[in-house]
Amino acid sequence: MFDAETTALLRAVLEEVCENISVYESGARTHVASKILEAAANGQLYRLALAHQSASLPARCSSR
Image (cartoon, rainbow, N blue to C red; front, side):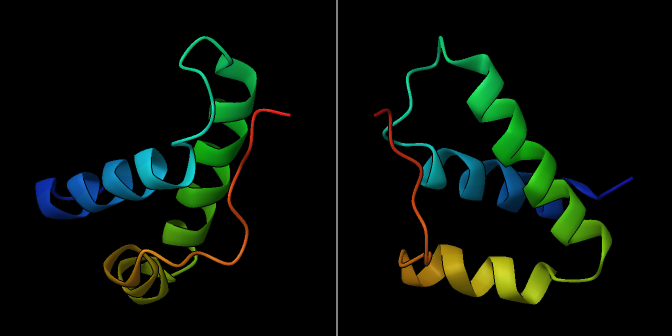
C-alpha cells in the first residue's frame, strides 16, 4: 500500500498520461493505471515523479 503523498502522485501521473483519453474508455485508463502501479511497485517512483514534474512522458495515450 502506498502513502497518501505517493497515491496523489500516481493519480496525477495517471491523469496527465490519459489527458486525451475519454473517461468513458475505462479499459484504456485501467491498462495505463496498471502499468503505473506496476512501475511504482518496482521502485520506479522517482522516475514517475520526474515524468510528472517535467510533463514530458515519452509516450502519451491518445484516443485514436
